[in-house]
Amino acid sequence: MKSWPTIIHTCKNHLAKNGELAFIISPTQTDDSVIDHAFQMWRDCADAGSATERRIIVYQAQEATDQQVELARRERKLLTSYRDLVIMRPKSEQ
Picture 1 (cartoon, rainbow, N blue to C red):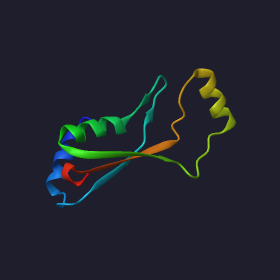
Picture 2: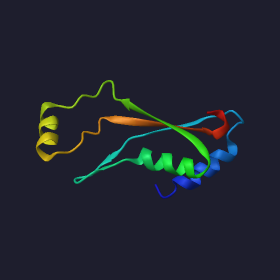
Picture 3: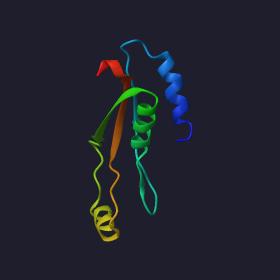
Picture 4: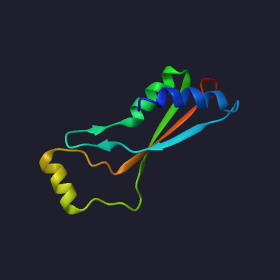
């Protein structure tokens, strides 16, 4: 995620006047936590002066097994069975 601000600025310079740029990203689940990359992307887009929209997309074909659900409950952890769609556009377009 360290390179994300550079990617935003590079893409922003190539975006058409009424253009949009969309990224799909999944959270990263570690042993102890879930890292919400989409939130960081949203913040960096906002800092760059872009309007940003975030949509959560649930996997249609992926379902958690009973064992995964039970483990998540027992260990009080989130299941990361979704992706985020982050849409960036010039602020004047919203």
